[in-house]
Image (cartoon, rainbow, N blue to C red; front, side):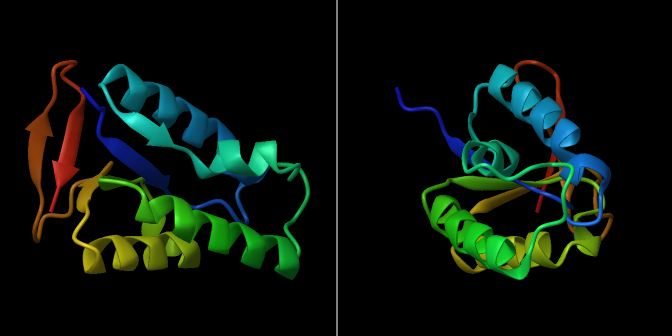
Length: 127
């Protein structure tokens, strides 16, 4: 049986170490919960981007295109806390919504999310 695939979205630019530690922690949690995880921090690392240096415009645009392609192959998106302060995470969420992907949130949005418990009792919030 094929595992459902989820893309992690959240703030990177302007965060210490591009927020990679939070992305890798969330990747492990989601894998433990039974997801096949697409982690943009992992893709950045594999492409040679350094978490201690600012991204140039070209690197950002290249990564953004790559991320859109990866998101298209997913069943869901996981929105990390503070995603609303990230331009990239906001457009990833908008695309996921347009494409009909399930959307899960680290922090519940009182206007339209409700908690869902998985087998590992990790609380996810979906809209």
